[in-house]
Image (cartoon, rainbow over all chains, first blue to last red; front, side, top):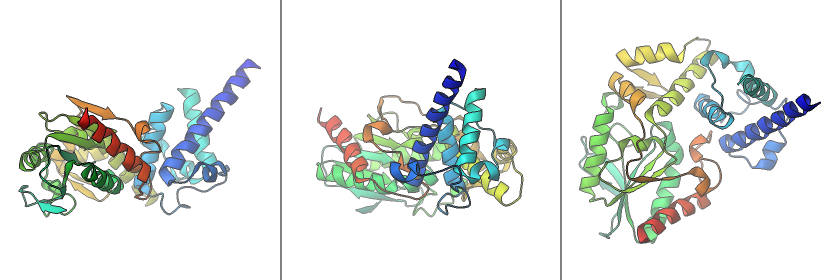
Length: 96
Length: 218
């Protein structure tokens, strides 16, 4: 029981951090980003999210989540939807 | 407002000069972050002008309106240019923005806004390039690119950097020296350099100008 509780708390923290980063990167207010679901499209769906913006996003994830993201971990699938990006961030945090 | 200063290739500067006692040299963020933060910095300078502080934002050689080729620039050249601009405008203080911190003339007191080092600036550019390449179906790694860059220079996110600049950036630390740091959380809101599109936030400019104006009065 304790363990699953810990993981779910950890998950919600990662989710909150990821949404805060997206607010900053996309210049949207909290409410708009609160409405993001797992299927919300990111890279390739939001024209303003170019490679430079994605690079900034990844660097910010490293800083705020205290993780290191290697080049070969970054691919189109991981960046395609909010759900995929969050799953990547959560897996990274659980391993670190 | 736009003044010439005798940079190596006759560079320009955004200048508010009324011959006042406090004269602030502003060293911009580097590369893409310079564009993202320019509106904030220009508006901050307007506010400082209103508060009785002269301020100067020089173009670095190879950047903005400068006619010098970016790929021929080195970090030492930029540091020299920052020092020359400080002397030309008779700066009494300096404000650096992000990786502009690595160019701060050591003799001036002042502030570093959200400082970061050269390696960090380079990493963001390398990452942008590997992501763009992957989208285009080419596999490139940051490691291999860096190897090439150290020897031959490299075009990163539209910036053509020479080998010397790449090697310089890798080792360039943002040394605080006698400068005080202004963290993003002091300004409130997210860092504008993170924005996917250049943007502006009035309250951040108000806060940044307030920190500096109050610092100069004390």
